[in-house]
Length: 350
Image 1 (spheres, helix red, strand yellow):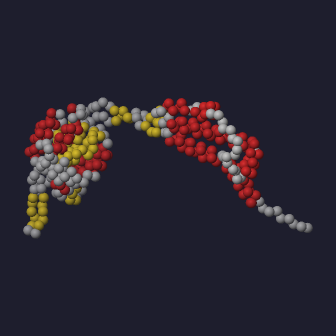
Image 2: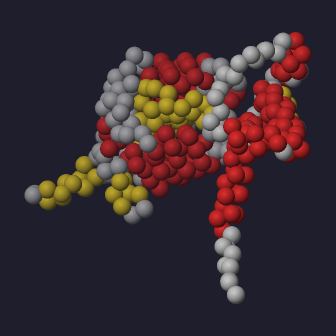
Image 3: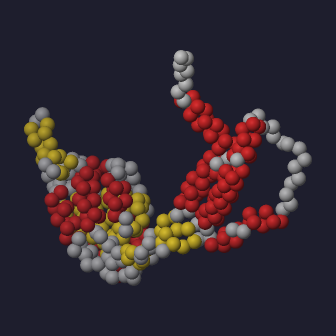
């Protein structure tokens, strides 16, 4: 249906009529404009029937233009059919470690060597795409933690911002406690039975204002469940002049701390040593049962004021084309053109 945001502007509809009736007409004593083509104007005035029809049409155009302007001033808009937004699901915050260590190339993605962050972007991006009906938010942390996106149904934006995140933009160290504390702050106003944080890291808390265990206790008090994921390979073969050397790039991973964080909040700690394991973990997290909430109804709206404005523009062009001087001038041009195309008569003397 169509609604008008400012219906009171219809009161301006009789304004031209009031001006015509109440404002006295100006008495013209002398010509204010010298017409260089007086003869053309005189010829136009000579055709009284055409002049009357032209004047009547131009007045009608003025009336239509005023009606269209008043209609545009009422700000009409089309209200579409109500659409029920998905209102079942959980409030999921995804906390992703983007510290310098996430740049280690100890993973494989589609058969090629990849960094940890590249694999996370791929796997978490697919996870985000599948979470239809959930409000998703994204927290990125390194030396500092910050919220990249608030809780939203817009999964495309969440995935896009994750894909565009550069390595180390939040610092080279790891502030796990600050990330959990920020999540608690963002989730505490949401329904108590509906708060979930999925935290992924490849290291140990090395910086920050809040200790991870203390932050986890605060999360438990707020009823926030935390699922922790320790990411990184256990073995990395490095080639050197003296042969191959096997190292553990995840030696600094705090598995005990992450396990305690999950246990305190009723979540689960899981270890992902490859991209395949990480996909399996997020597939398992996909089984979180949604919780029904109050339905939200959205009615799409579309502004229509520019349609009457376009009509005014078109009518004004027609009005200008019907101006007496312009009309007579055009008629004169056509007359001269027709006369020029006439074939001269050939006189034959006998």
